[in-house]
Amino acid sequence: MTIAIMMFLCCFALVASMTANQYHQAKEISVLRAIGMTSKRITILYFYEALILVLSACVLGVAIGMTVGYTLLPLSPFSWLA
Image 1: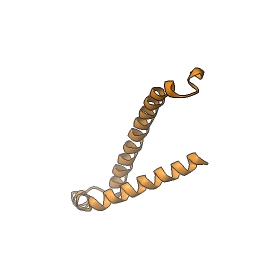
Image 2: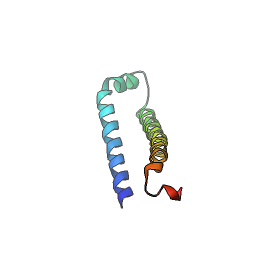
Image 3: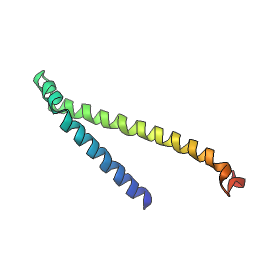
Image 4: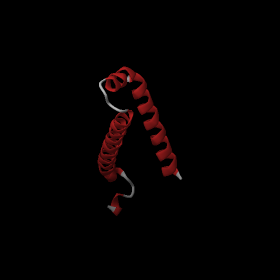
């Protein structure tokens, strides 16, 4: 249940971030449309941007989580399990 709540919050944060990004880049999107880029290609461009953002966040989250976990393991009362 906790994972589902966290996934929902992460999805909401991503959607909010991408919506704000598109709002702030409205002029750039209109320039792309003016030079002949189709709306489908612009959608694909933003999809790949979101994909890169999510994958990099996953990799960094796992790396930081493992580092903190292994750093704090000797301080844990269950350090004998490792």
